[in-house]
Image (cartoon, rainbow, N blue to C red; front, side):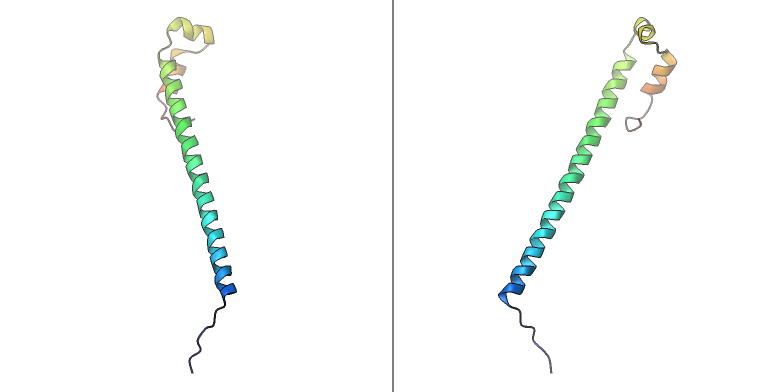
Length: 83
């Protein structure tokens, strides 16, 4: 004989509440991931701008800050994702 499950309204409410909690947790995780990705992209852009500004410095400015042209060349030629 096959049994037919009998669910009460309370069972349905509990399942619906659990599903809402899972959905909220998923939205929170996605929000955190997007925040991290955005922060990483901003950092990469900041590095690229800083390196471009370094490349434009003349010899007098380099002497003022105590950096050689070789140091600047090494820094400017790094990929933007490297620190």
